[in-house]
Image: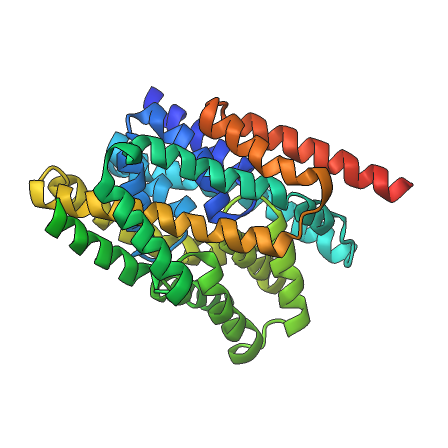
Length: 173
Length: 179
């Protein structure tokens, strides 16, 4: 029973503090799922799976973690907890919003938060680099550099990128 | 009843068939709600997107909740949110079940050893595009570095960093408004 509460608490936290979209949420999810025995590497695998399946990182990570830790019920609890607080917030807000439309203060705050979001995403990259121990593995550095080049220069589709990198891994490791 | 079902189905369909997260879904949702079903006008859709992006949580769920609420009240919001969440939930459940079974296979381990650095590279891209779009000036340039250092190197829990960031930013915005 305890595990369901812990899942609910963690994923509510992620839902309520997950500002700035999926990528900015990664650092927060990383820190929370460790508590459930999901290793840094496994979390990166979840991100990869999330890129090639429908839905956003937030929902995918909660469903996966919940399922791994506490089965089907766990996945329901985690996903529901992730969604529920913001759902309520949006409902309250939708009422307010239609009452006082064109009050852009919230969007101003959000725009001013962009430096924070950039820092959050960068932080998640640092954590991933540490978990992969990328500096000890020249093959990983090569794949990283190659992927970055393809993504940045040729705007390769993320799904194709993951397939390519997986094939590269199978060949060179 | 029909309205609830329509809401559910529209969001279910869009979230089942778009891979790549919320932003990828947005144009499809826009077409469904502003053109095909004529539920709301285009400019209002943009407003809803703006607000949904500014709120915490999964952006696309915020969009569907608000649209559902607008069209059919609280129950509409529930139908739209359920439609949005159900497809990814079921898909990742199957993937999790399958992946947990095969992940210790040595060939699979090799594949994921290759995939992980690519995932890192995937996450570098939004840092670049966001940094360009944000046009940060002055001392604020230090903020992303400080945040990345605090979480990535000092291992401070992001929740504290986010709370501090949001509170300080709100205070600054309000002070500026008053001035």
